[in-house]
Length: 202
Image (cartoon, rainbow, N blue to C red; front, top):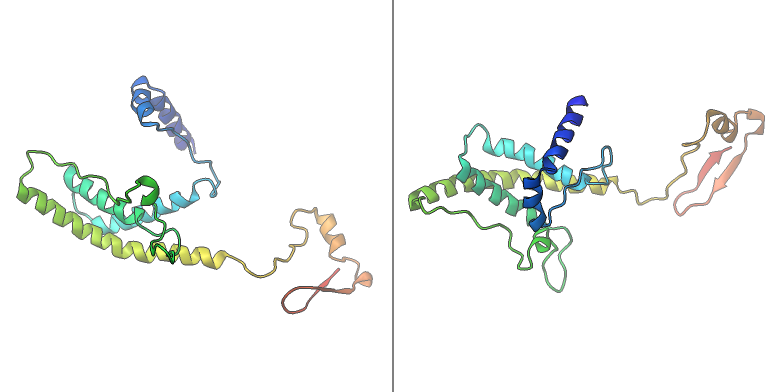
């Protein structure tokens, strides 16, 4: 915890540097920290980052990538993640809403590849092929893990009637009184619901 706090302090100091501010300001980049222990405040992209890291380690393995290969692989993976559907396919357009639609009005999946003049044609083809192999392996594993994430989210949705958890925020004395600690006053009460009939005690 101490190391984590120290790192955040150092990052804040770096963010306040005039050179960093001068770089971020024209790009309209604003630095915001994710709220600790708040999955609703950034939990979605934190989950995607976790999936990306785990699959990327498997796809790359022990290979050593130079800067050009790393850039190619990163851009290919960027296209895979940003082209994932966020909604069901619309009947009129037959096109789901994707992350890339928020990034570019043309719906481009990737950023332009940086090409230097000193790179030969054979060199470019070679690292493009190597990057494509890694991207293909990433894609196969990405489909499995991302779809599993959607299934897990769907399974967590509760469509039935929600029963009140007795005394979830009550004191022990209140829970004892509400649950009928005195057996001589126990009775049964029918609780109306849309499904089968349930009976509770009080």
